[in-house]
Image 1: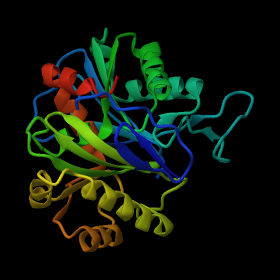
Image 2: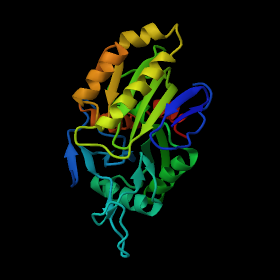
Image 3: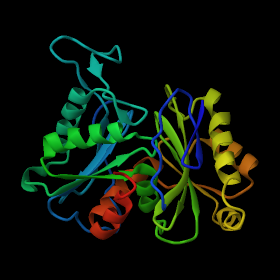
Image 4: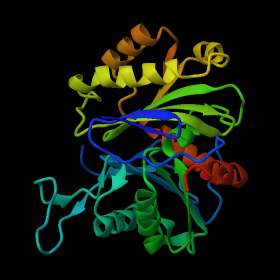
Length: 298
């Protein structure tokens, strides 16, 4: 399905309602390396990347990114959505089970050891560009119910761009592809905003990343986005190339197909699965920039 909203096309493997854009613009929890070269988070702040398959977080005073599957044990009635005795509260990056999401958020905040940071002042959370207003409110409700503080939403491709060191406020447009477990989003970032975007919803991913049947769709979606960049901006986009983030960013077949089809440099990010949580973490340290970018996530 291809849907058009506010001047941009978004491709979807499943029917989805995308909101109009504002004008202007395996199992077990684990820990990853801390954000290199960064100071501890401002006390009272936390960053949270709620993904379809895995959730990543970092809190005030934390030395490492905490990571766990995006699932919780089934309730007393034995309800389960994955056939393995657990509930998965997110699909395509958005909340589909509010109560289970609240439980997941509680587990995540426990993972990052925030006992010394309470009361929290603010939690920054990533959301897909394609999330509707009700999707966004569900995330805000889940986090606020547990944290009891201000919840700031930042669109995940913007956070990922910050996480890999791009200057998202620059007027030079940048092309970014964020390859998640349940949703793939291609965006153009210019002067602190996502100016065009497309999204492909995935029913499942493989250990390698995007399933074979969907690779062509991802490439076509990204090609369409590049094609629709205004002619006077296209040379700059071609010079800077495509940044690829998310858990599927290092998939060799996908990268080869992108390079062949787009004929521009394609740059998979280092530690691409952690780009979004790193970006949210850095935004915790730059409140003014977080507020500016959050205008797109509200």
